[in-house]
Structures are given as C-alpha cells and as structure tokens.
Image (spheres, each protein chain N blue to C red):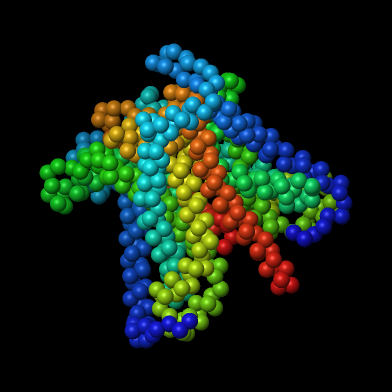
Length: 291
Length: 312
C-alpha cells in the first residue's frame, strides 16, 4: 500500500503515541462514568427518604437504607421477597435444565455418527434466531388449556430446547473434547450415558458455567412470556412487579421504596456479574460466530 | 471431525440423546407456532369487554385488517425501526472505535476494567433499566434537578411528553445495554486478523486512521454484517424498555409503541385472530433476517475446514 506520508506520523512517534493514549483513556473513562452514573444515583437514592429525594439530587448516601428495605418488603401489593424467591427458582432451574440438555444434545451431534446428524444440526442452527414472541399466542393458549397458567413449568421446561446454548456447547466440544476420550471410556466398559455424565460433563464445566450464567440472567430478566403466564400475586417474578409499580399511579409512591425495588431487581445479578466478569466476558466472544 | 466411527451400533445413542431437545421443542415451540398460524385465519375476540365473538373462519381477513390504514401497523413498524436505528447508530460507532483501540498493538491500553463496565448494563434487567431511567428522567428526578441547577431554568424538561425526547431516552437505554456486547464481538473479529498486515502497513507509513479504514473494516465486514442483522432481529423484538417507559405503549400517542408491544396488547385483550396475523408477519420478517444469519454461519464453517485441510 503506497500510502501518502502522514505529516504527523513522520514526526516523533512516541509523543504522538502518548497523546493518542491519553485521548483514548479520557474518552473511555468518560463513557465508563456515564455508564455507571445511573447505577450510582440508584444506590444513593436507595439510602434516602422520599422527601429528600423529591428535593433534589445528592452525591452522598444518607441513612435510610434499612428503612427503605423494610418498607419495600412489607408492601403487600408488591410482595417483593416472594417475587425474588420466584425469580430465583425459575432462573436457577432454567439454567440447570438448559445447560445439561444442551450439552447432551451437542454431545449427540459431536460424537455419534447417525444418519440425521447433519440435518439435525442444520435444523437447530435454523431455528436459533426465531424469536419466542412469534409463537406466544399458541403457547399461551396451550398452557391455558393445560391449566398451567400461574405455574412455573411453562417458564422452566422450554429451556431444555435452547439452540443458542446448544451451539455454544458444540463449539466448545470442537475445541476441547477429543473423541479418543470417549473411545477409551468404551474400552473401559463404561456405558454411553454414564460416560456423558461422569466423564464429559466435568470436561465441559467451563462451558456449562458460562452458559448457566447467561441462561440464569436472561431468565431472571424475562418479561414478555412471564407477563402472559403469571397473574397471581404470589406467583409473580421481579419484572412483573416492576411493571406493576410503573403502571400504578406513580405520584403516590414513596420514591425511596421505588428505588429500593429497582435495586433489589438489579443488584443481585450485577454483583454476581462483577464477581464472575472474567468468565463472562470470555464467554461472549466464544459464543459469537468465530471470526 | 474427520474420524470415522467403526461401529454402527453406537448410532442409536445419537438419536436417544437428542430426544429431550426435540420433544420439548415440538411441544413448547412447534405446536404453538402452528397453532398461532392456524389462529390467524379466525375471527376470535371479545367485543365490548364481555361478548365473545368467534372463533369463525375468516380466511385472510385479519391480514387485510392489519394492513388497512386505521390499524396503524405501519406506524408501529416505523416506531420499531426508528427506535432501533436511534440506538444502533451510536452503538456501532462507539463499538468500532473502542474495539479498534482495545486491539491496537501500539496503544497497548489496559482494557480489563473498561470491558467489565461496558458490558455491565447488558446483564441488567431491561424492565428495571426502563423503570430506573423513567425515574431518573421524570420531571422531579435527578437529571432534571441537575439540569435546572446548571442552567438556572425554571421548568423541568418533560421527557415523556414529547415524541423525540421519549424515543431518545429509550434509545439511550438500548445503546447503553448493547454497546459493550458489540465491542467485545468486534474485538474478537479484529483479533482474528493477521497482525503482520498491520505491521507491514506501519512500516509503509500508514497512520491509524488509514489502517482502520483500509485493513480493519474490509476484513471484519462479515462480522459487521452479522452484528447488523442480529441487532435488527433483536430490535424487531424490542419490548421491555419501551413497555415500561411508555406505560404499556399509550404514552405520547403511541409514538413509541413497537410491534411486539402491539402483539402483547392483542394477546392481553384476547384478540387472538389479530394477534395470530401479527405473529405471522413478525415470523416472516424474522425468518428472512434469520436466513441471512444462517447462510452467513454456514458459509463460514466449511471455509474454516477447507483451510485446515489445505494446510495439511
């Protein structure tokens, strides 16, 4: 490439590099701060009482954290603790089922040479991008006729068929599951199903961990389908409670409680994320189509 | 995987192990999908809140109602596209910028903490993000408080009473939630580029802007396309954030109501015929976009294998 000589590039390289580096850090830090400000305001306002929040913004926290927490969990319209429990149950079981069965399906495609192997793989890739909303009508009607409204089964069991999780597991197996291991297990007399459970699953641990986190988070955050399936006060998950807070007459609310309710929905996942961020960030790049 | 299985007797295990996936897929996805299509040909709704009409076979009537001027389908399609575009433009701009900085061999930036912060909003519940931003941007919320203190304005900005400010708040949330994800995807793509290309360009005296436009962009074009289409599919499904921000879509004359919010409205009021027809239209749009992604994935797979075979 016969590039025209750049006026700056010809000069002292190290100064321009230093200037560029400083510009980069300034811009990156600015964007990082902007990304964090909403959460900062949230945490500050979780510690303040209604009248102070109405008066204006404060940089420093105040002492009402416990009071706000108490008034949120005692609010019988919101039933926050109960919803927190429901969200935990649904998300944890979804993550468990999704990772186990996706690994099993990926293992079948990876290891066994059966006639429909290629078509099955192609089919799963094809359905990967179909949005769940397009079949929501039939789904809700079917669940209604099976009396599964206000039941967690429609929110948990479908995660067994998770094409994206399957695809990730398949990618991971291609890079780190040599077929010799399976062969060796067979020679040792291990049955196929036992080989998968006691030998393959431990090897898949890193992939399972990453996908368990992703499935947990997306189930925790899911709003559309639970909104159509759950209506009982005692069966709500967190996003539905958020919607109820928003839909009610906003002006009558104690703002300290509103911020606290948002915080209870957001912070558990945010904290888990911060602890496991190394894992997760590596997983995103792996999960995408290989570049 | 080129290893040929010697024994055929293991093949049955392949079928056994995919049974759970397909049983669940058929019950919870395929049957509902077919039933949704079937429902779209029936008139089936509740009139005036109590009178059940139908189900009566009406053929394509639901579709023609959907496309008639007074049902506003095109308005909601337009809303969805505008909301997506407003979020996507800053998203792709910052993601490209940051991805190229993070992978620049000369800059040697410390990226760990930034990546963690940039990706953080993506794991946050979208409904809660919507609620948080609604409170932050409300007339007596902190954003207006800061704005009035700095400018001395007497009146707060009513973000949720105006078409474009309301749309902008939604776009800001979408941008914040997705730029980190896109940055990391593009980084993976740029890291896949042979570093010797950059080194020889440097020796030839190319500056960072030139290497970005002449090397990085052309070589990551496939991934850019992938990001664009998957983002479009995601945008088509946009629901949580505008649903919360606009109080179920009604705010400011339904100017931020998306297609899926419209679908939810029909589902909620048990207008199954219209909901069915709308689902089919969503399916077709998503299907066309998905096919593009699918061919993209397929095309990349054999290429990688061929390369491996060729080198050996």
